Image (cartoon, rainbow, N blue to C red; front, side, top):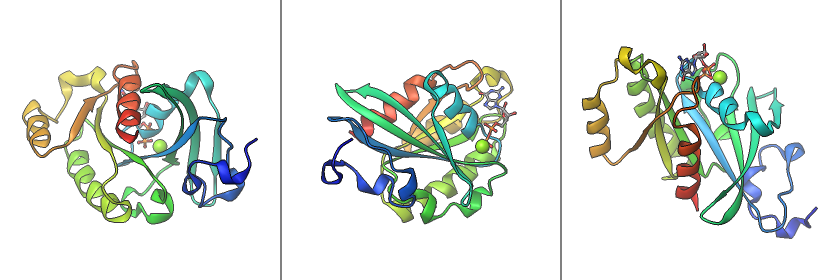
Length: 189
Ligand code: GDP
Ligand code: MG
């Protein structure tokens, strides 16, 4: 265990001191928040990603599930601390206690429901007003059902022209999931 002074990022655990983890020497911690409407696949994406080395804790008072996964990006060992609102989250109530200390955001959209894209745009505005312009990737999830998507290629091109990074994922098949987490991690370094 490292002495406190060597902890790279205090703010990761600031809202929940009892959940503090102690990254190994040389490893840095990055808090990532999953943001998006109900049922877009936020929890499924995290579970797909961390399944092999699953370590999760609940902050039941604020309805947040925290999972951790250690990866290497750009040659740097990184401990990703993934925050996911539990249960029937009311996405409109995304707030500072959830986002505080976040270094990266996934905005998750359900490709089958066009309205979740509009909601994601609103959430992005709220999130950036709370935590500043941190790296953010918009995930269009449920790519295994892309034939039935309401979100069109035209929508995606439009968003890309606005400067958003967009990736397609399927928590069901795993398609694009590792690549998305790696891309966000690299953007945070
Ligand atoms: P959350 O509310 O954003 O956390 O969404 P969940 O992860 O609970 O997923 C909502 C529903 O969508 C569940 O029934 C999941 O099984 C389903 N789901 C999530 N990701 C995918 C996906 O990539 N493909 C398909 N077909 N279903 C998915
Ligand atoms: Mg969930």
